[in-house]
Length: 131
View (cartoon, rainbow, N blue to C red):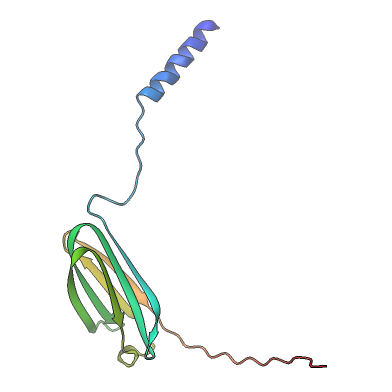
């Protein structure tokens, strides 16, 4: 019985001594991160903020397209960390969906965002007892 406990201890010690922790993730050394968010309206026009973060300086191409594939806006930006704000003219796209394509030149990767607008009107009637 004593031999089995010694063997078990030796096996546990070897397992811990020669084991590696391998973490699986999608981020490589040059992975970039993008974030597109709606930040509000200015002069009744929607404003979006795009945050681009990369481990190395990269060239990004940002393209706004309508649902039919027509290019509304495109521009190239260089840098490792960028924050850009975009104010869209709502008469250019109305209630149709927009697609924002962010391409990284060095990583050769593309991220696509979809912007959908909808309008809703709420009418509320409240009755309060006064006396």
